[in-house]
Structures are given as C-alpha cells and as structure tokens.
Length: 337
Image (cartoon, rainbow, N blue to C red):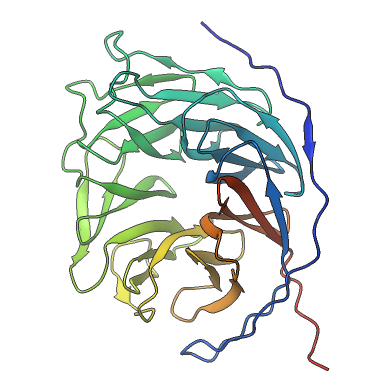
C-alpha cells in the first residue's frame, strides 16, 4: 500500500548574522577561508542525515522529520516517521531514506520522487518485516539499484527503484561483509564500504558479496567513505586522525595521518571532498592536504553530516535538542584590517 504524507507548513527562519571564522593554521599550513551562515530550527529534532540531488537538499532528523530545501536556507518540513532517519541518498531521480528500527518495530524505508512527499516502500523479504536486529543504517545508489547495509549482523537489502526491497535470495545476510558498517559509497559500477573493524574497506558489485580491499589497525576505526564522481579518487576517514586515499578507485590505498582529530564522516561535494568532525569541516580536492573551513565554537553545537550541491556546502547536526544547519558558498573571508 502506498501512503502519501501531507506537508507541514513551510518552516522558515531568518538567517542570523554570519559567523566570524577563526583562522587557525593546520599542521600543513592551510587556513580557513569560507564564510558560513548559521540557522537553528526548533521542534524537528537533531539532524542525523543529509543528501543532495536534483537541485534540492534533504535532511533527516532524530525524530523522523525530513526537511527539504532548494537553497539550504528555507526549508519545507514533513514528518513521515516518528523514529530517527538513519540515512538519506539520491539516485535514479528519487530520494530514499532509512528509518531506524527497534526491538519491536521493523525498519521502515521511505522514498520520494521530489523530496517533499514521501511514501512507504514495500518490503518483500518472504513477506516478513525488516526486524529490529536488521537495522539498516547506510544506503547508496549504484547503476540500476539501491543497496542498504546495516550496522549490525551484516544486514543487507536491495531495491531496483527504491520502492520494493528484497533480501539476498539465499538468506537475510550479505556474505563476507564486516560487521558494524559506518559508510557506504558508489564508485561507478561497484560499492565501497567502511566499517568499525579497525579501518576496514570492502568492495562489492551487488551488495551481497563483499571482498576486503584494505585493512589496518594503526588508526581508526573508520567512520566514513566517499568517492569522486566522476573520477577515480576515494577518501576514507575515521577516528584518531584516520585519513586514507586512493587514486585508482579503491584498489590501493595510502595513509595521510590527520593529527589526532576524530573525523566522523566524509562526502564528495561536486568539486571537493568534505570531511567533518564534531566541531569542524575540512576540504580537499584530492585527500592528502586538508584545509579547515569551519570551526564550531558554541559548546551546544555538534556536527553530524555534511553535503555539497548547487554551489553550496552544508554542515548540519544539533544545537542541544534542535536542528543546526550551517551553509557556505565557499566565499573567502574578508581580509583582516
């Protein structure tokens, strides 16, 4: 059964004064240059996921809201779920969102052709619901399908168009996938994922069969992975300054230690890789040398996602129990007087 959700009224907030950036020097000597605006939205929970596609930004929150915007400043708010949005992605001209499951309630998958109205996806795993232990947390689009992975028990599901999801034919778990997946990205016609198993990077053609491409315990664990589109560069980041780069699509990797910073994720933003920590955003065109572009000085502000599109870079997370959204067009800061 397909259910369309009505939109709540337009949620608009005035843009507060631009944040003054603290220009600090990284170990490599790069200074922050971008100017950011800061916005806090009440009543929607904390932002837990971000995606960009088809000219619009979509943010998922900890309380089941999905926020949509063309400019990342004025947001339309819908609430198709009551539990946390684990992940959002865009592919095949539609958005897909994963809603967290519980011990009693199975995982919900939502899809939307415009990012504003959302529908329940069918779950066709022997007509069973996705169980709470089958908690899907990462999703990506590859070729002619969407693939979703879980943070526990090697959970896996796939869909041709995002509206009907299936388990693998011979079971409800992927084969060879490390547990505790923390990131998933598409690199042309295959997938790459990172996991908490040290710094482990694996690849797959279909999401069902996985092979380990790289593993190290020197730093980590890994917290995110992103691939250049188009191109062959891939970046994986994680805790304790983990920064791994590949110039050949993930076949070989080089380590570029990032000090002791705990990096929480990374995204390809159209022309740059953006990595983020709890308090900062860093950019690079290729991976080895990073520039800090944002430092969050307020104690209550915490970053949980980053994305780029439409000539804008968006970092989002939480201000206490509220949604935090920060936007930059990459405009250089004015010179010091």
